[in-house]
Length: 351
Image (cartoon, rainbow, N blue to C red; front, side, top):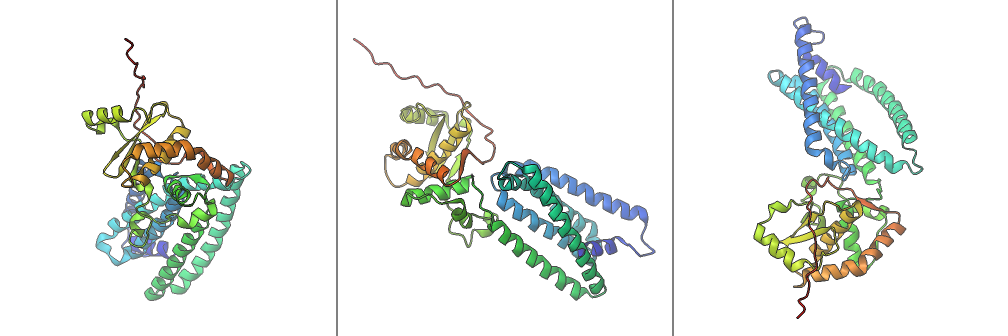
């Protein structure tokens, strides 16, 4: 209510000098930039929303607060009014895309009896009631603070900080039982250290709920194993002779696998076979994490990781299932590049 009040006053509502066509054009430009921003955001980040639903849910609310802040400061800079308002509209367009997409993912999480439609309808009703109460209180605050800039800014900033904190705490409470790269890395590292598998509730506090760029200074887990794995690498990105030598030397390790792992300078590239299933993709990622964990620990890198996969992978998966983890697939960015190869065992010469 405070930001809308500031925006309408900046457009010229209540002033004789303001024209209808001018206000209409400014509003149209604001909406247009928001639509374009939503399309661009979907193009660049749409495929990452499933795998990082908690983070993008929080980012959506932060971007909404940023958009309202842009609306509130727009009257202070009349010469840059349109530019500031358009920035706020773009910020809110990110909110629309991210919140809508993550709401679908989180609704599935809460639908324990496969009743996603029922959950979605009730969540929508709760949100409507909360919005109505917020609008009534917002009108009261706007009425009281009218003509008092300091009171407006104090109210806005205090409410925004509380809103950000409440959303942060709410997202932290979510214990998702799907496997994404970060959760898989946390689970595997603990299993390799202590042979124990954490439950979804135990993993939840260890996850990043803010973008990694914002938490890199304070977090100790930024350099986790999943940051060293590149899933679905394009095979043509490697040097031809290099990949041929690699395949010849490691053919025995990946004879029956639907993927190939290539280690270079501590980074594990996963080349996925075109016929690989969701289970194969999950297995390839876990194998890559094991390989990344063993880098710099021994000379027989691939043989050690292959031995671990043969002896421990099924045990690890069964323990995950017993604690309620969904092991059917890995929630990751879509794998665009796949490869095709045929393994033919070499025939021994007979005299």
